[in-house]
Image (cartoon, rainbow, N blue to C red; front, side, top):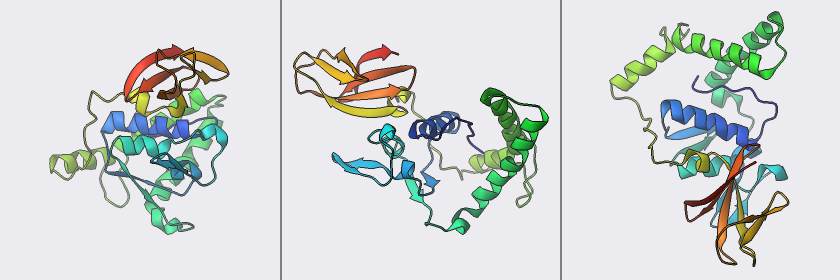
Length: 221
């Protein structure tokens, strides 16, 4: 289990934050295997919006844009084909049967406490539990595979701007007064009218203004 987070609401941002947690810890995989949830299907190609069911607050492009910018592909399971991800569902079942029971037993009242329990479960699953099929502890099997040259995970380059990649992107053009409108306010950009810029939002924390991959400004919320 390479990443596990409990959140109030399932959104694109929460999904990409889980990806961030994973790639920082383990590196970049060749691809992510995902289901057909709308969050994973929304993408932008050459300025043309292609989407399925996506709420407006999900923004323009998010999960797939983040992965594609890192050179990570996406593999979709077949619709209504549970057998396509049987091993994944079996792993989920392990946690789904234990986490609610332990939360109730310990009278957990908030997500932070529940996350601590989940973290303990993941550590046990990865580092102590002997897998029923392989007969090995998962983390040791992982390490052996890497040592034998079987690993395909690439290291995450230190130069990558993680906040820019793992944020919600919005696209704007600079107004006559050199500002852009965002969240009901005007924000200065220092660029001439008509300049296309990218707003990279980390909800409840900050957003950054980028032009051609270069950060121009950072505003804290």
